[in-house]
Amino acid sequence: MKHSKDVKDLHTLTHRTGVDGVGRAVLFSPYPGLRSLGAVHLPRNDVTYRYLSRAYDLLVATVALALLAPLFIVLAVIIKLSSPGPVFFRQYRYGLNGDLFKIYKFRTMRIDQCDVSGVAQTTKNDPRVTRIGRFLRKTSFDELPQLLNILRGEMSVVGPRPHVPGMLANGMLYEEFDTRYMARHVVKPGLTGLAQVKGFRGETSTSHAARKRLDYDLDYVERQSLLLDVKITAQTFWTEFFRGSGY
Image 1 (spheres, helix red, strand yellow):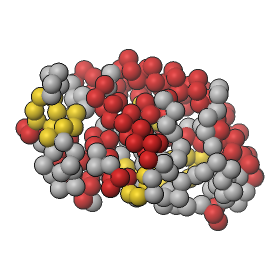
Image 2 (tube, one colour):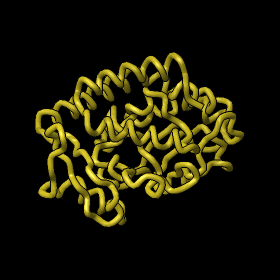
Image 3 (cartoon, helix red, strand yellow):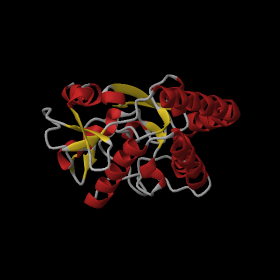
C-alpha cells in the first residue's frame, strides 16, 4: 500500500532530519504523497519510553479486562438477543506506519445496514444503530473490545484514534484535505487520544472538526510522555464513561 510505504519512510529514514526553532528533531519530508508536509515532528523513540509505554498498555488492558469480564458477558448476551448478527464488529483500520490491522468493537448497528468500509460515518440519531447500540456508543462501551488489540500490540491505550482507509474529512479524502494526515500514523493508534478528550471525536464532516482533530493528533505525537498518557486516560474515564459524549 502506497501510504503505508510513505509513513514507513517518514518513521525510519531519520537521517533526513533537521532541527526546528526550539531545538526539536523534525523531518523535512521529500517523499511522494507527503511532499507538502514540511516539518513533521518525529515520535519519541527512546528505549525507556518505549518500555514504559508498553508496560502501561499491558497493565491497563489486563486490569481492565479482568474487572470488566462480567460486563462483557452481559453485553454480549444483550447484543445477541437484541438483533441478528455477531456480537463483535471487525474492521480494518490504519495502524502503526500505516499498516492495516483488524480492530474489534461491540456491534452497535443492524447487520443488514452496517457499512463494513466505515466510510459512511455514524451521525447523531443514526437509524442504523440498534437500541443497545445507542447505549454502547453513548458510554463508549462499544470500544472496550479494543483492549484485546492493545494486548496484541496493535494499539496503545493512548494515541490517535485508528481510522479506516478512505476516511473522509469535510467531504473529501482526509489525506487530500490535509497533507499532514498520514504523519499521525508514526505512532500506534490508541483506545483514546488527545483529540477525543479535547472534544473532537465523532464526525469529521466539517473543515473545523477535521482540522482540529488532526492538529491534536499531531500535537500528541510531538508531546508524547507517560505522564500525558496517564492524564488522557483519566480524562477519558471521566468524560466518556460518566458523561457519555458518544453517539
